[in-house]
Length: 134
Ligand SMILES: [Zn+2]
Image (cartoon, rainbow, N blue to C red; front, side, top):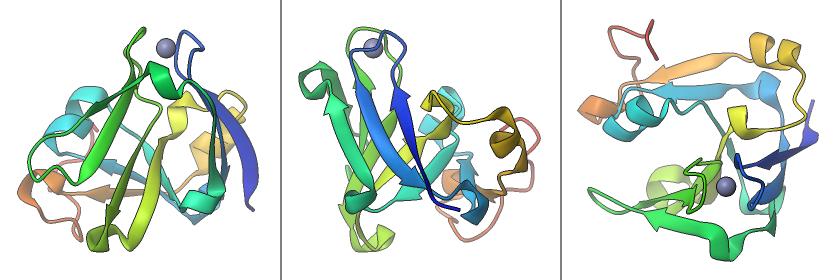
């Protein structure tokens, strides 16, 4: 069921709302940035994402092909979401770090299906051989 959640960075400078159906699936990836930042993501379309405050508090980090905007709070360093506008992702979309949601019941996190992707090898359609540490 799609629900509207509120998320934020750690210091509270950045706040957002996102309409997410966690039962439709979440993603963990072994690429270099997902591993280091322990990303656990849900993908949403632009109409399902609303930045409430903190646009000027967000810094934008890009690397590699510079397709994905890895946003983080310039005060506390937390990365509540990122976005990309690319045919690879079906147009524009947001990747919400679901652990930055403030009002998601623990049970919904426990029950959320997780798809693992082998981003480290640009093999996005397959899971990596090892997922236990992700
Ligand atoms: Zn912050």
